[in-house]
Amino acid sequence: DPGSGGWEGAQQAAAELCGLYYEDQLAACDSLIARLRARLTTLEGDTAQFLVDAVLEQVARRVERLTERLGVKEEIQQLLSQPQHEREKEVVLMRRSMEEEKPARRASDVLCRSLANETHQLRRTLTSTPHMCQHLTKCLDERQHAQRNVGERKHTGRDTSVQSVIEEENRLLKQEVTHILAYKDDFMSERADRERAQGRNQELEEKVTSLLHQASWRQDPQEPDACWIHAGSKTAKYLATDAVELIAPGGWRPGTGSQKLEPPAESGHPGTAQRGQGDLQCPHCLQCFRKELLRHVAECCQ
Image (cartoon, rainbow, N blue to C red; front, side):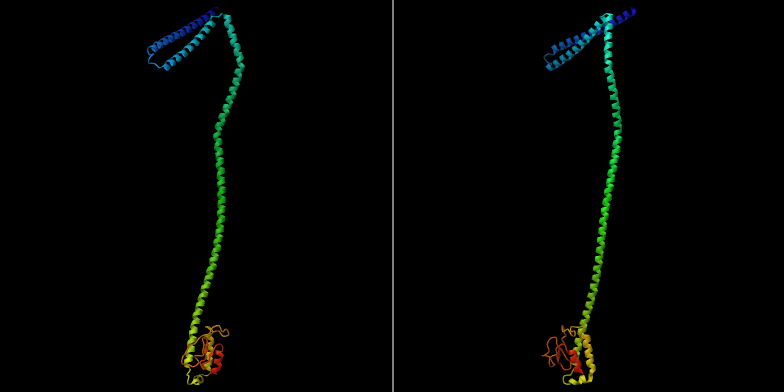
């Protein structure tokens, strides 16, 4: 067949070209190894051993790769050198292996699709995660704000109750202060009245003392009846009324006997030695009395 003959010729030409290429690479590697060995020989005394080992290891790896390529090239040449039926047999085997690999390929395709779906879902989840985080943050802020408002209302209510208690206490204290001021005003007015009464009592006592003193000096000891005959009952009445009005507000109160006035002592009158402290002397008969002075004066002056 001329078509098959052309195909075989092309394959042989390609195999020859590959062989020439690999042969050239092997020749280049051999020349490189030779140069390196020559250089190593010249630098043997100055080069460190680890550098030599590294270069040799690198060259060995290169040789291994080239050897593998050369083996592949020989396999291709053997395949091309086989007859037509043998090549077809190899093709059938390759197709059978491909058919056997189809279920695994389908499974891998299904697995890839499921992985792609999961990847898509994960991407959607990642995309929605920021929105969800923002929503949760907003809900948390609203809840904290509500809790703060409740706490502020409770605090405000507590402050209001405390303020009402303080206002009630202030009101009670103001009432007490008002009562105390009223008591103070009453006390001050009573004190002023008491001071005025004491001053009035003192004035009346002084007036009674002066009247008694004048009455005692008006009597003449040599003519005891002249003054009282001339004065008559008018003097007794005057002395009785003045004694009741003036002596009573002072130190002596009729019927109590607690306090009495003491008239001024006169050394020139008889009966002075017999008069004790707190006794009152009759201006007519010069006798001393304690409680019966007024009645005696009324009887004596008549």
